Image (cartoon, rainbow, N blue to C red; front, side, top):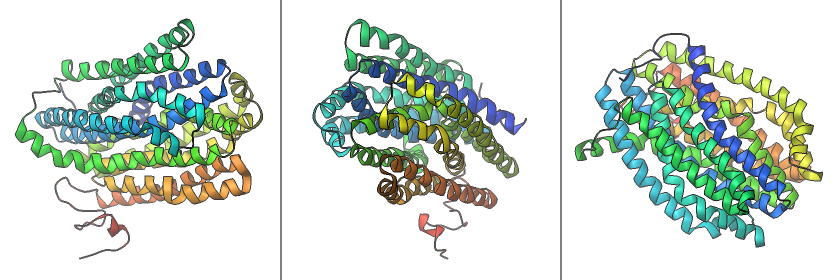
Length: 463
């Protein structure tokens, strides 16, 4: 039975439980990617590690499409549950999954056909570029299954069932972790083995996420044409800006990757290792948008804006506690981490840089994730687009360029970090204003300032 679980009880406890359980599932996947990188590094071929780095940037781009669709499904289902409308929650789950399958299939085909161009745009050349394309040719066709699994997990979290959402991704991570050494080393398939293991893991995640939605919550019904037409607009109203917002991160990462490519494969390998470290170290923070969203969404659906505000503040406090703890662990473990990858020279220097001030500065992107959850669930998804593109383009491009001029490869990571600090603050201020204004009641078309308008009303009010 559907139940709105977040309308009562300790908000900090809800944030903590939802974030930790969601992060365990995310980290299961991220840890497998991390282990993939260790295995590939053990092969002693720098071009393989660099290829995985380039491939990771493109997969991040495709996965971000799924995150946006999951945000839409989770927000709409949470609102319906908060309003005590179980039938609407079921219909929106069904229709969101149908649209998700259609959109993600088309998107994955377009990406697959464009792989050589995309890899070239990232700066990969020669054998490394060929290896990256080969890896992606195998993995990209499985992305619709991963995206459906992500949407299923978002729906489970909207029901307050973070445990089953977590178990879906953990199951995929376990399958990947078991198959990796067998295929990479046992069958001597190297990069191909890692790709095949990833495909199978994505299928497992999809099945494990959707089965509870159907069996436990009776959350999927036969789609109806009238309902599909009705729900297309609210789904796209959140999904489109959420997808744009999520795509900003891999676009920014692509720019960082290309900037780092100018300093050689040691620099790209160092960046790739840091890229795997970030989600493992800060998986709890990455999970916040999906974890906090249902808490905000249910209380917003119930009309309790005071509880929405207190939930947002509890999430920011949670971010501060996690970042402080993880930064201390990374700093004390930086030598062991570098040794794990046999990192030397510039690669080692980049790892040390991350395991210090740059990890501490991740507090501000953490606040940005919480703010995005507020924007998406309070009817202001384009503010997520604004802040994410501000971070990953408007601020990142000039700051990465300036950092590279001043500090070479290290400056690339420093510039990327400063962009996160700047727009984390911007998102924090905007989120507090959205909450104070009471969000946007569904179907009113009101923006942040209470009028009909577009994102431009952030800068100019119109009557």
